[in-house]
Amino acid sequence: MENKEEKKIMLTKSVLQLANELDSEEGGYKAPNLLQRLLSVFKNVRLGSDITHFQMPPMFNIPKSQLQYTGESVYCSASDLLSTCNREQNPVDRLIYVVAWFISSTRPVTFGVAPYNPILGETHHVSKGNLNVLVEQVSHHPPVTALHATDDKENIEMIWWQQPVPIFYGTSVEGKINGKGKLKLLNHGETYEMNSANLLYRVLPVPSVDWVGTVNLRCLETGLVAELSYKSSPSFLGLGGNHKVIKGKIFDSSSSKALYELDGQWDRTIKLKDRINGEVRVIYDATKGNSGLLILKNEESVWPTESLHVWGELSQAIMSKDWDKAREAKQAVEERQRKLMRERESKGEKWIPKHFEVSHSKEVGWDCSPIQNFVSAAPIIAFRK
Image (cartoon, helix red, strand yellow):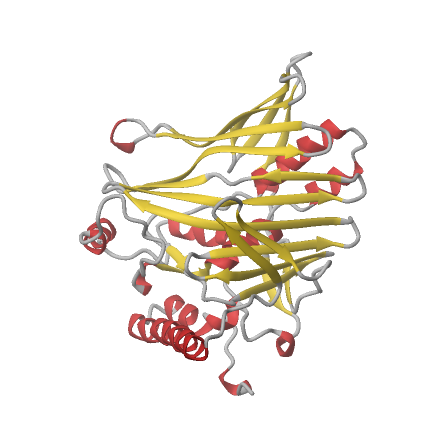
């Protein structure tokens, strides 16, 4: 049994809060000579290489696991928009608020720092109001993350799996996010399927990172579709230009008739224009979002696989800027992972996720289905700042 004295759970600020600090002059996680250090790190990486398993030194880590990023996209999003979805009687209006909620789930990413690569079997379990969120790392090679979230009061369920595939292109890294998400409004018998935008890291001429690509949100029952285009168009030498831009439309797939147009920036406001009467209104305002502060309600109930526990010592070292201790802590986690893998291989055992049934084929790809119908309440609580 695990020694309680050795248990270290480190609550850290939300991605949004950390990103704001990193972008400020007082940011505490920026490595000195950032561009020079990054170029030296990548100097032996071949062009076109998949760098999924590339390990960054702790100095380039933000004190969070990628599992926490994934979880925060749900429990730090504007969950009140999901409640609005349920209250709307018109299927078009429900899709509009699903779109607004999806945009609110977009997490900021800061150039030069990255979250920890989750270990196999790592979990992140958080509750916010009646919304319970569970994330599990169901595969390590390749890295695949599965998410299940339920809200008993609103009768809403979310199921999502993601597989990041970052490719190095010399002066940029393109992070393609394979996967599929499902949002179920059970009161209305509707399922909305959606994909994810991709990340584009530019090293030169000016370091930057942006979400790019096309996202489709489709209601399987009504045939209504929202098409969102995440854009980034920096000007000469990376100065100025449009960043964090979203343009899109909502249309009926049966007739291809466009009903609405969308335009704005995901970190500011998104406006919706009615194609028939020209009326324009704001459907999402990022300034009214959710910072998602965490509190520990019941330490005894925190699983040993919880991200805040697995990476607690490393996060504390990074926040204290004790880089020697950070390297030791990171190596300790990675070595435990390798040891467990060797033990399974020696016994001929195959890893089985605890919370999801997972299958994979070349034809269909990955499929991650939650074992339980509902996610239990978590010992870690998120709340609005």
